[in-house]
Length: 351
Ligand SMILES: [Zn+2]
Ligand SMILES: [Zn+2]
Image 1 (cartoon, helix red, strand yellow):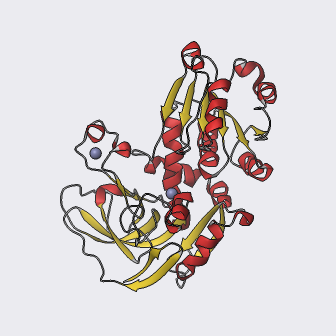
Image 2 (tube, rainbow, N blue to C red; image 1 turned 90 degrees about the vertical axis):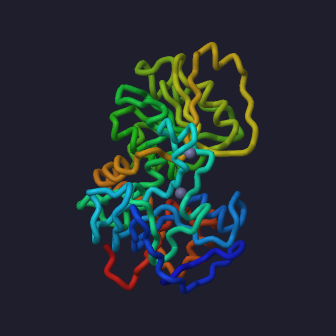
């Protein structure tokens, strides 16, 4: 089979490999579409905690071509069924896994990030990590279920309800998709970013209000208060921090209402600081959110209900043989990339 392997920083080599053979409880999946995210860019630049060479690709949709019965077999699956793939491979035995929180398993590996992934004609995946794509959903939108599930994890961790007023900090893909999920829930959503263009997108994703942040100025607390008014006079009940900028967490903790929740989904290795007393005084729940746990089916349903909105996030489309150009585009800030879609079989009719 055909595969594209990232062999060293910014270098991809085309390979011919034997077709993998599924074992008991596994499936052979022919990959149809892949989308790229920021993590992919870091791996491609060899600026990530993983070793190259590696076949990348972790946001995936495909079609089952072979099923082998065994433990973990699932009835909803059959040859020819289109599926989204949960790329997380957990140990199943550690403390987190035993509590149903395999998304933070210390032995976690991710298909396409720590092990060979979807820039190959076929992958072998345990059947329990495959989710049928709803009939109404085109295959090329299904890879976005993976990042949507990450946004849904943040929304779930934050115990969001339709009654809440929520501030989303950051209108990159995760913040936009969180905005969509919160809007779908019926919450009042204010989405903030430093780029006006992203705020325009946030409106399309269901933001009731948008807040332009100037990093050189104080957080625009008065503008926020004006937007949410009486509904949440003491601040939003929930803040989702999706930028990974350390000072943004400080803004989140300052802005949140007493007895509110702050979810940190943005990632950074930099330290942050804030007046510690804010946490006990307001009894703020500060919650981390990483990957997702069991939320791919919910993500697929959400995409099926909002297909035009999700499609508007896919700003660029490349053929698999042009993968290097796709990565170069992803790394070019002047390209205004939302998400990049890779067609694995461009010679076949788009589906
Ligand atoms: Zn990703
Ligand atoms: Zn584990």
